[in-house]
Amino acid sequence: MQFAFTLVVIAGTVIVVSRLASGRGFPVPLAMLAVGVVGSLLPFVPDLDLSPEVVLFGLLPPLLYAAAIQTSLIDIEENRVTIIGLSVGLVLFTAAGVGALVHVLLGIPFALAFALGAVVAPPDAVAATAVARRIGLPRRITTILEGESLLNDATALVSLRTALAVAGLATGHHGEHVVRHVTANSVTLAFLWAVVGGVGIGVVVFLLVGWVRRQLTETVADTALSFVVPFLAYLPAEYVGASGVLAVVTAGLFLAHKSPILQSAASRMSERINWASITFLLENAVFLLIGLQISHIVMDVEDSSVSLPYALLVSLLVLLACLVLRPLWCFPFRFLADRIAHRRTPPRHIAVVSWAGMRGVVTLAAALTIPTYADDRSVLVLVALVVTVGTLVLGTFTLPMLARALDVRGPDPREDALQEATVVQAATSAGLRALEKDPDSEQHALEIIRRQADMRVNRVWERLGTLRGDDGASETPSETYRRMRLAMLDAERAKVLRIRDAGSVDHEVLQSVMNQLDAEEAALQWGVTRQARLRDAVLRAPDRVAASCEHLAAAPDSTVPRTPEGCEECLRLGWDWVHLRLCLTCGHVGCCDSSRGKHADAHYAETGHPVMQSLEPGEAWRWCYVDSVLG
Image (cartoon, rainbow, N blue to C red; front, side, top):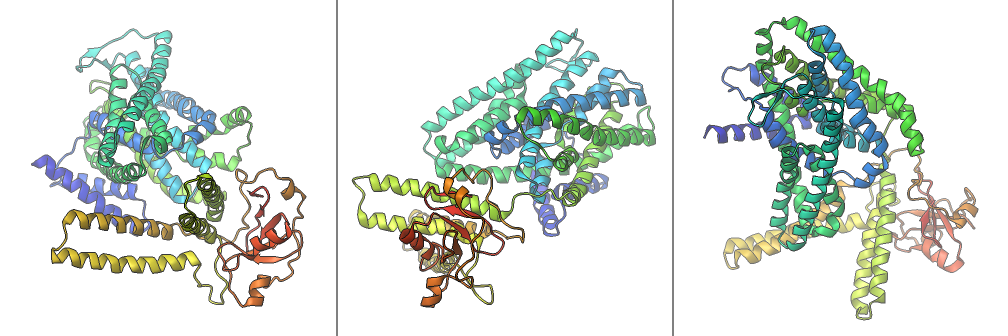
């Protein structure tokens, strides 16, 4: 009864506090942390012991898996050198630096001090990427932070385990004190086994789950299987002494990469929605629980041989060391990583990455694994807590300011829309060609499908501009359709509810109809939420979309439009248009495919002039009709 009530209170607190904080623009993790601190000081709030077993075996696997299935395996592969350097090299560098500092300040054995360094070294998978996405950092920076925070826990936990063994503080499976003889060879072999074993078990779990998913047809069963995957990978790996972190991350990355083949569309949607809910609760509950530990940890320090003021001083110095050691590693390592990857990373990007080192729940959980009989254990736990809270506060409030000061921003939303439009158009064209080659295709149905495909492509292109109008508020055709169809859906749903209340139709039949209405409304509403907010900067075609094309290379940079006031044909006919296109060969101005006349396409069909350019304000991309590429 008490346990169930506690869970309800935690979930309710997470929901209420996150709603209040996000509504006021305050970082939710810090709000949870603050509420937890206040709760730890209230006499009627029970002590909630955040045991390391709960975090490492109960919370860490699902959080890692949820982050892994949202991460691109391709992006991780492209940035593997930098990610490995941060998740392995930086963790060991930080552990050694912090270990040396703590060894001097507290006089404890270096092995135990190194163990603390391993505890505070890894940034958190949740905190860093949450801030990166919230402030809109470039995608490569976000990928690097995601990859680092997913993999560095493995290095930190293996280093912690090894350091405790060297210090003679290792424990057996049943908690008994075990002293092992540790050599350089045994440490190297243990680390290699942690990596190879963890990745190997992750691959085995991926293959096993992939085979099972091919046999499943029920969306609910497939989603339930995904809840088992993180534990199915983590527990066996930890049992054989490998890295459970690497096992979970490997399984998650591969399953996400293969999900379009292994899962149905309904299963993928269900998995995303359910894991988003689970992640929301777990992430925020973790920070709430961290805050609740503070008064308990401070009381333990007061009972130790080290005074609380000196313990706080040591904690602040370790926090400062963590903040300094990260850029000391990142900037020199940049040159090696760039040489290996044959790219040049701007120094301002390195500055942002070096400041995005927020610690989280793994740091505190790892600190709690230090045995109770270790020298000055309570002080070491306090140090981990101060580093966690300090990096969270500093990173959350100062990282956005640093990114703005250095002008480090994510991609323009229009650039995303531009890439999306080309991908959708290419995919749609491939689908239509497949239907046209099918001898069983019926012409009337094909025309309906072609019109729907055109509408789907035009809907993306329309995000790059608006209809001509003095008030600037005119709707595009897709917006008009969306508004009218949403109003129609409201009326349809109201009618279904009246039929339901009359009790004249079976519930299952009505539920099927309601599900169809909900799915269509969700798709339409999703389109509303993805309307791009255009900036004033000139839009350039992205490198990964622009391709080598002789027509684009031969076309002039600009051409004087014959009718800069608008589409030639539309002006003559008195029609409106959505976008304007400029022919770089003759200066003809025509309207786009979303417009009534589609006069730009008609001009190409009539003249064969290959390259047109957008004539919309702030846009500078070009399109080759012959090769169907952007430039």
